[in-house]
Length: 455
Image (cartoon, rainbow, N blue to C red; front, side, top):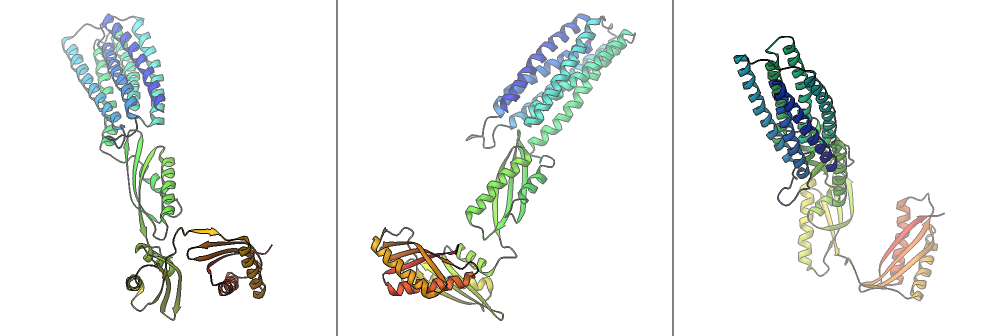
C-alpha cells in the first residue's frame, strides 16, 4: 500500500511542475494576474506534493521504541502546513488583485494560447484529483486527500480564470482581477474544509461511525457478555481501538485469549486497518450454576479442587469438595486452607450452607514411571475381563496399560457397554470393576477407565 501512495505522489509532482511552469510563463507573457495567481496556486500544490511524497515514505513506517503509535500523525501535520501555505497565497492574491482594481491596470493581451493552456490544465488536474482521491480513500491517507483537494481547486480555479479572461476580452477590464480573487476564495474554502478534518484527527476525534462498527463487531463474538467502554482514534490510516469487554468469569484464560484474537480480526475487518487493545473484565452471568461459582471461588484462591457435589435439601444447600494440597504439608496448615475455602463459599451462598471438604494429597504433575512387564499387563487384563463379566454390563476390556511409578501402579484400560445405558449406570459399573481391581492388587494406586459404546 505504501508503494501505491508513493507512486501516485511522484506522478503528481511531475504534473504539478510542468503545468505550473506553463501557466506562469503564459500569465507573465500576456500580463494576466488571474493566470499568474493560478500558476502560483499550482506552485504551492507542487510544494505540497513534494511534502506529501516525503511524508508518505515516513508515515508508513511501523511503530518503534519512540513512536508507539507509528508515524501516521506526520500526514496530519503536513496537511496543516500545506493549508497554511494556501492561505498565505490566497491573501497575497487578494492584495495584488485589489491593488490592480484600484490602480486601473490595463487588461491582459489575449490570444488563444492561454485558453488552450487552461483547458489542458483542467483535464490534467481533473485526472490527478480523481486518482489521488481514489488512492486517499483506499489508503486512508490525509496527505493524499489534501493533494486531491488542491488539484480539485486547480480545476475550479482554471474555470474561474477562463471566465475572467473572457470578461476581459469583452471589454470588462476588471474581469482578470476578479477571476484572481475568485481563485483566492476557492483556495480559502477548500483549505477550510481540509483544515477541519485534519484538526479533528489531531484532536483524536473518533471517526464517524467507527465506534459503532467496532462495538458491533466485538458484540457479535460468542462469549462476549457486554462492552463496557470503547474508544477509537485515528493515527494516519490506522484506527486505534481501546475496548473494555465483559466475559464470563468461568472461562479459562486460553478461551478468553481466543475471544481477544477473534475481536482483533473482527474489528480489523470492520474498520479496514485497526489495532485493538482488549481489556477483559470477568463478570458473573445470571445462568451460572452453583458448581461453576464454587469452581471460580477455588480458582481465585489458587486452589485445586475436584469432585464437587451440590445438593438442595429443601432450601438448605450442602456442598462436598475434594481439595488437593501438597502431600508433605502438615495437617494443621491443610485444615486452615480448607477452612478458608469453606468460609469463602459461605460468604458467597450464605452462612447456613453446609460445606464438607475432603483433603487429599496433590498428585505430582510428572510422576516418574516405567511400563510394566508384559506378563504383568496380561495378568491385570485377565482380572479386569473377569470383573467386567461379573458386572453383567461391561465387556470387551482392551487397550490395557500398566505403569510402575514411585507411588504405585497406574492402570489404564478401555471397555465397552450397551449404547443405550445411561452415563450414571455405566459409571457405577466401571467403578465396581476399579474397586475390585484395587482389592485384588493392593499395589495398584490408580485406575483410569474409558467406556465406549458397543459396536
